[in-house]
Length: 95
Picture (cartoon, one colour):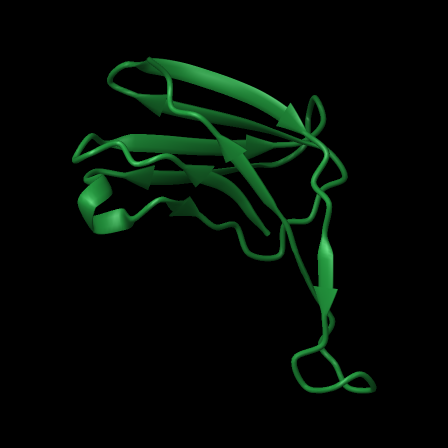
């Protein structure tokens, strides 16, 4: 899952945290320089039905809860594994 697309933040550092459920696991993507990291925070093998994304920059924090819609693909053909699921949640930067 690629749960967060972060709008360009210039060279500002940003952090993305993804979690589901009250006590569910959480995943963290920290970027010290957006010019080097790009605008994606990708979390492999993480496909929750609902997810809360928190994006933090020096300008503040923004949190958004979403129910991702997954696309399914079979890169090795329709009768071969693996089956891949991918979704994207876009969160605007704080400030």
